[in-house]
Length: 391
Image (cartoon, rainbow, N blue to C red):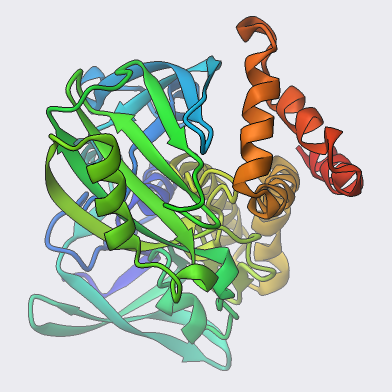
């Protein structure tokens, strides 16, 4: 094991492996440390993406795509269906293959990837991050690096050890559970969302097609509602009510941050990326595109910092500024929209579904949806205007 690196990346998800690939392409020596036994497992994701979002950061391999998506179906609490056409070509991924291939691309660029590598601590020298302590297959190592990227997911232990405040309030952490349901009848060309508060207070139920007869079916419930309802029992009730003859497999559960990006995503010698930095879309809970974007931006800043031999927080702040300029404003707008949606009752959602159904399908849009939201709730006009000013 080489003990000195230009850059160590903690976490082998899309944020980490994209950062590793872009940095390695510029001649940076990069080590990626992934605590799980295999890249891409376990899959804790609905797996929905836009194709264009992927193409911005990597050539798209057709084998990653389980199902292409052309529309979105919203179901109001009373069962009314509102269909929206996708403005972008969408897809449901096979995350295991996708994540594995992203790691392989990083290796082809010159990075080294180690699995079953549990980072247990940071090396600090007068407040500057200078490497990590890691256990790799029961062997303990002390590894030095000039820059560390914390892409270790929502748990984000590495950022905390660097003194970054990563706590999320319960209302901004969704508790999610998902199964792959088989032998069900649904629209295999659409992302389906069920908005009934009985099933998912402060969240929603999703049905994301994996084939014509199987789909990822899951739900997210805001953390401040979990004392009222069990996410697992709620999902089982939804399956029983909606797909009573379904079989299911692959139960997964986890937390999804639907918060604003962390106020601080850099420290001397350290940058935080992806879910660890709370870059998940607050409205939808999707995090793949943001993870890849942050990985690329972190790599760009790391290359420049290493060239100038300046790993101060002030210099690395260029990464935070680049994220805010590219995605941060939009992220804050989506956070405000999430707060508005969470205030809506089933009655509000039924009324909204009725109004949207009356609009010709080709004229339905996110803007029109939120115009309909404020039609009977003038107190929300300012909130909606503020949200859209950021998007």
